[in-house]
Image (cartoon, rainbow, N blue to C red):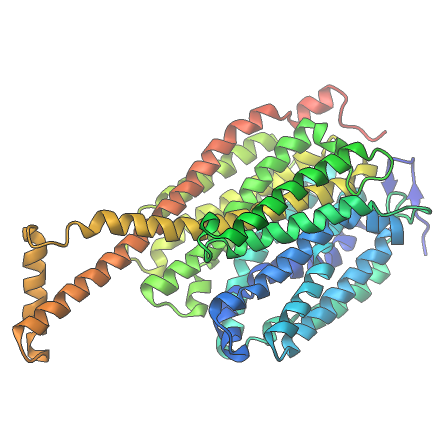
Length: 529
């Protein structure tokens, strides 16, 4: 077996081909991001199996997000405590075992515990895979490596509803978790053969847990996720318990960041990396991208199911043009890596997302699947063009020894951004629908001749089915009110897509505050020391 080649304390080259090492890392990362959305379309079936209400079944999603949110910022400490490769293999094993437990669950309580364990195991896979890949590749090849990594991040949430819908319709919902078993076993053994211990992932003796920081983190993440997931059902701040939860979350968040800044010797996360402009603004942009990615992936299938009667599989299939856009984007970004400015590619990506959002805002209830193909394709191209270069650009000025911590911090904030985005769009649709219904209901009155004529036409067509004209007239008004509800809900979805467009356009100027790789190289800031 060839020996590792260690050039300096900062430059490290593995003995095996980095692209070969990336295979199990990409597989593990893809399993995690796929499971973020694969359960969405199966929730009604789980609710029926466990004999619970739909809003109770959403704890299946909440427990997974809480667990991953807790473990992601703790990754750097756990790597120092146990060694990064050991911790990575443990995470793969725990994720795989917990997936089987999810499929075997016989009650909602068992399912929540299993999903929590799955989130604990899976939460570490994303930052660990990212940091290991960044270290294995020399900086001149990281653009192409992150193109592959970004493709997995974007495609996972897109394919989740498709895969979940197909498996649920053709088999049963437990198999959306059982499919992780063969891939998890394969990933574990291949990782064990290929991964090498780098100088930056070794076990550190005498490392101690920042107890106060971890305590504040637990209270912050748990209460925040509960507020985001249950706030809309509880009427947000109209509910006393939501107000208390929010207060605890805000205080815990402030206390967590203060504790990390003041703890110079042994912080849970090292926040000094936030002083790096590229890392800071790159992370902000990725938070927005993750919010748009997860929120749009959640509401488009929901819109097609609620308003047009699509099955779970067909609604999931509606995301396939976005996958085609991602594939197009990954090919082009891989070709353009190191040839075109990363900032230019991210600007184009954000612009494409904005255009896709505006096109989504022009749809109506007479659409077919083909009508949402173009805006979905633009979303896919835009997400890949924006997400892939920004990962590399945000990390380019950091040392290899900072990458594990930086990946943990970045993915923690992206995870929160995705949760906030998903929660906000649920509220937007609910509130915008009520607002538009109140605006439109004023037209359903006898003083509006168009309304009178439409009721008369409907009543005339329904008259053979009823005993008297009065009953037919009442049924006609009911049909018109149902159309009003559908139109107001559609309007709410369209407004939400336009907000996605606005968020993408507003984010573009932040790129001007970041330096391109070429300018950093000219200043001598990008180099292996």
